[in-house]
Length: 184
Image (cartoon, rainbow, N blue to C red; front, side):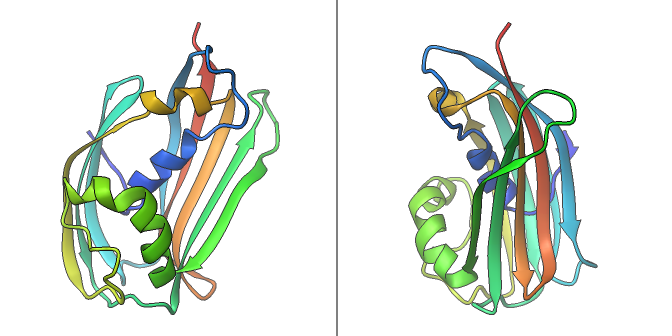
């Protein structure tokens, strides 16, 4: 098991499997190359995350998060996804760049794409909860299966940055780089 930062890890894994024009009959392998924490001095969160690779397409994730400050719309959630060709030295091209005030993010992106699934395995807040009060959160044995997204995958190196921002300051976040290749 490996220690992983911030609860946004779950959201990032969902984004990295989105491709751009892959043929449905092709099969891909996905490998996490880099997973780094981006955060300040622990002023906002302390946490312990684990993830375990179950198979080539499935990961089990668990976490305990202590949020030290109330979070409101003065904070924003920034998600950036970029793709590069597999060739060494290929530059990343931004595919997706989103920045929303936290409460708007909760009521839209979080509600639409993540809440229903996370509700079953965590005490993460309801999408109408904002500001987010100081709290302790957990998630247990969440299994992310990328198999259903195979039709959307495309070969390349994928970089995802997800951050909680206060102005220009990163309060917490992650950087993940994955490689997606055609199965041999």
